Image (tube, rainbow, N blue to C red):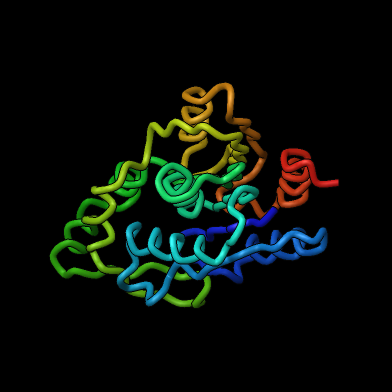
Length: 214
């Protein structure tokens, strides 16, 4: 078994969750791949650019028959897209997956700011991996419109964790995903927010059961 872990938006391969799961999986002899989805830089990041990195990362995994895709937030969205279009993983594990991206961003971002972003071509977001604000091109929004980010149907066992107090990706997104895939999706609603850092031990315990790790 090998894990391909995809970090979230404005994050990186050394995030709290990425390091937690890399350490835990490594301790039981499971190799974890954690690509930097910001490459070549955050300014030009799009869903398409990130999926290209996922594709390149998959080429490094020789035996994909036991591949598990795991993703957090936007990484969870990417993992779901990749599972349908790029790879045939054995299982999916999603942490607060960022479904319905374009619609959510249109609601989360003030319309005046969205218009300014379109007119100037760039906007600033706090980047957790950098510890500072970083510019992102409006091409991110343009590109997002070309990708399907909701109403996913999966054909492999999928485990989803979502905080009931998530203000970034409403838990309802995962509830709908579960309702649309009742036989293959397990949903664990946690007493937590979007980051899920308070629930890592529980998530690890459930993940071990899901993957049948002793």
